[in-house]
Each structure stands twice: as C-alpha cells, then as structure tokens.
Image (cartoon, rainbow, N blue to C red):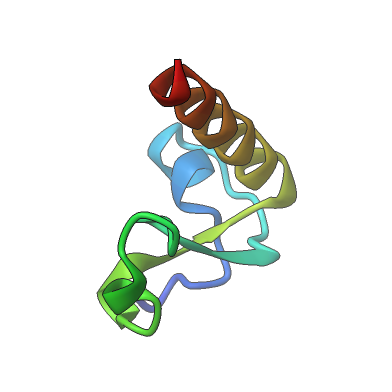
Length: 66
C-alpha cells in the first residue's frame, strides 16, 4: 500500500477522492491462504467499493460451483 492509504483505490482510479474505511484482500483468503498477511495483497477501499467487490466475488463463486 502507498502513502495514500486513506483513499479508496477504485475511486482514485476514477479521479474521485473517497475515504477508505476497509482494507481489502486483493486475492481472497479463500483463494490463497498464504497471501492473507502479504502487504502487497491489501488495498484500501471505501465501503461502497468493498460491497461491490464482495458481491462480484460471491457471484463468481456461485458460477464456479455450477
């Protein structure tokens, strides 16, 4: 993570400055347990972006089970 840890990475890419209130695992712990403590696998997200990512991951998992 960089010096702008307090800003949401997703929003920042869109030119928006939104306070990050969640530190998210880029690669989910369920997918790679060994990356759970890897700092390079963490990104700051706002609550809204984290919710969107979580929903997408759940949908991906459901599709994989079919």
